[in-house]
Amino acid sequence: MSFVPRPMRDSTVPSCLRSCPGTTIAFNRAQGLTHVTCGVSRRRRTFGGMYPSGIFVPSIAIGGSFGRAVGQAMMSSTWKPTFIGSYAVMGSAAFLGGVTRVTISLAAIFTEATNEVTYLLPLTMVLIVSKFVADRVNRGIYDMHLALKRVPILEWNPDTSMERYTCEHAMIKDVNFIVPRMLVTDIVWLLHVTTHHGFPVVKLNDAGEPIFYGMMQRHQLLTLLMYEAWEGPDGYSRIISETAFNACYPTHRYRKVHELELPEDMTGLELVLDPYIDVTVFTLLPESPLTRGFQIFRYLGLRHLPIVDKRSVLRGMLARDELTEYKLEELNAEYFPNERHDARHPPKPTV
Image (cartoon, rainbow, N blue to C red):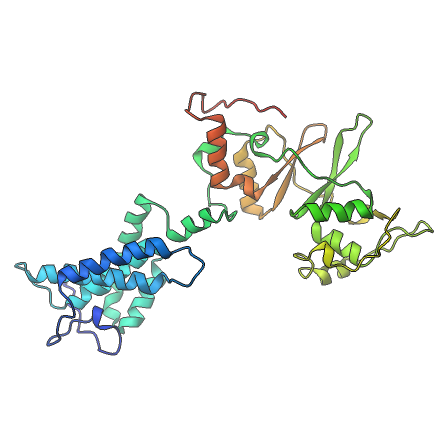
């Protein structure tokens, strides 16, 4: 059964995508290819800038111009298409699908835009082929943009080169930790000089080693400071309920410590953090495969993961940033600049 599309209605699509019997061709094949070249060059310069340059409508116009040029080229062959506008629609869908890597939703959008349900099957086939071909060339434009902005979004599966490393290779070794009983001035200073969300709580042993005890989050510390839950002169401190913490979240999640109304003289004031420490925290050994850490972050949605040894001594922290592709590239450049080492046995880093 052959596919014979009907002429599209004048009110559904622009003249670039329309070629009903009796209409006049808006531009010739050379002009269409020129528009494609100029449009692609312009998109490469403007996308990602801090101004609204657009990606959907320009991609539709560029793909429609190329598809129409192909349709006009077919007019000069022995087999002449019935409607050139059909080529323009398929070109728009193919170009936009290759740029954004979207398939089903674009097929529905173009079917609604053309008001022709007979276009659904060929549009779906075109979008699947365009995505398949584009995935063999590079990543989608939105994935590239996220990588350029260094947004810590993890892929579905770890990269194969991640199997070379353990958590000790990628972890953050210089960790800012807190203790169960801490001066208010020290907590305020720590919140001032850091931006991360989680703080490991440790207890120092006789040798001065930090024994991992649990985790506390930034918004918890901010809530304790806001309610002035430090220890009073009588040795008692105000206990903050879980309801109070939930009421302040996520309001205090992105709040700055200088926005709190704290007393001017905080000398000698101490916060007792034991009632608020999360002791049920996932941990990994430094020798654990980095792919294991990736799976825990990916499946559980964690933001930080303490790395402790067999004696529960805190060795470092693994954050989501340390598992992204650009961090993996930095590890490859550091440990395998010329692939001179055995990929299965990377050199052990010094802690």
